[in-house]
Each structure stands twice: as structure tokens, then as C-alpha cells.
Length: 297
Image (cartoon, rainbow, N blue to C red; front, side, top):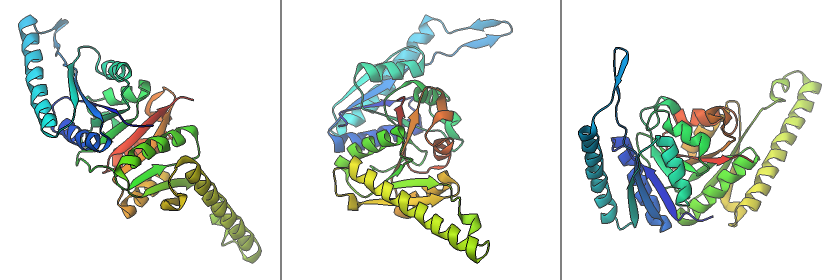
């Protein structure tokens, strides 16, 4: 996989600007073309039992203001030396994003977030959640503090097809950004509570505990070798127990990760994100950009 086309939906907010700057930096590394897309939202007002929408002149003013704002962002992209396109499309925002990505063979979508309150506060409110449900294009979510171009990359990995797809996209980004790669697998330490149950039971439990750890470690290393063409020794593997999301974030903090990757499956929304609610927790708590890849099998 190569990243040749990057789409940035923008609502001209500060958070959207962070996403645009992130996309510019990544596009320069990938020698990719950038698509800047805005979908104007025409407000409707409820007056008693009636609904009021702005007239043609007000709508024209909204569109003209959007065009001016888009032109300002376009100038910044031009100054950065990145080939790009701009578009204003009317319609339902998440459908516009999804359809535009499909029509232009977009390889990656970059969006910004609002605040630290999880997916409900993503740009355009719940729009990004809807894009996650319907779009098959990988999405990088840039947090309020922004983010640097990926260097140290952490991949949440559970051996599933969605996890492998996330690793493939991470490999494409790593190919132009380089830096260390980390595969992190969270598992249930089923024997841990038995290790202090006396000499016989405790010793047997500890042996099974070590065997499980070694087995998972071997599986991670085998998959790392299969997924990445670089020397598998350059890929570090991590096994975490307990809360998977907390473990992933802890590893990301320890290794100075600048990108965390996870996969999604199906079209039933955030509840179907990789490893249950883990990706939702990552969306809520991660202070570095998060890459989500869609996979429906």
C-alpha cells in the first residue's frame, strides 16, 4: 500500500487547522496529493411549531464565506509546496466525506477532534463516528494538542484481520517516516491469581503462565516478520495484562509514540471497534494521533 491521496475535511475551526497542518506534513513525507473538503452547514431555526431556514441571500453569503476561508487554507498548503485540490460540497456531511473519498481513491482521511470527551466530541459532532461506520478509508484522528509526523508507531494487535489491516497501513506510513514499530497485545492473565495458592498449585500455575506468555510472544514475533518486510528484530513486541487500553497507552507513553493504530470491523459503529471498547477508550484518552482502519471481512 502507498499513500498517494490524503483527504482533510475542514470546518475551519482551530482543531480542523491542526488536522490540516498534520496532513500537510504527512503529505510532504509521502509525496501525496492533498484534498481539502468543506461541507457548509446551513442552519435551521425552530420557531414554535415552524421551521425557518435562511433565504437565498443568506445561503449565498454562507457559501462565499466558506470559499474565502477555504482559499486561505489553500494558500497555506501552496506555501508548504504540497499539490492539492479544494472542494465545497453540499449534502449530509458524513456522506459527502465518504463519497468524496471513494470517488477520488483517497488513501487516508485526517480529521481533528474537539475536547477530551470521546467520539461524541469529534469534529462535526457525531459525523466522524458516522464516517467510521460507513467509510472504508483509514482515518487519522488528530487530538486537540495536535501531533507530530509519525515516528514511533504503536499498533494495537490481537491477531485479527482488522488488526492486520491496521498494521498494513502503519507499514505504509512507516515506509516514509521510519522510526521504531511496536506491536502491543493485551491478554487475560488467567493463571496469575493462582500463583500464590501454595507450592504445588502455585508452581503449576506459574509454569502455565510463563508458557502462555512465551507462546503469545512467539506469535507476535512471527506475525511481525510476516507483516513487515523490514528486519523483524527492529519491531518490538509488548504483552500487557489488565486493562488493554491502559496498557496500550502506557506502552505508547514509555516509547514516546507519535501514532497509535487500531482496526475497526463491520458497520455497526464505535461498539465494533477493534478489541471491544478499547479503541473507544483510545479515542477518549490518547494525546497522540490515532489511526483507525476499517475492515468488514
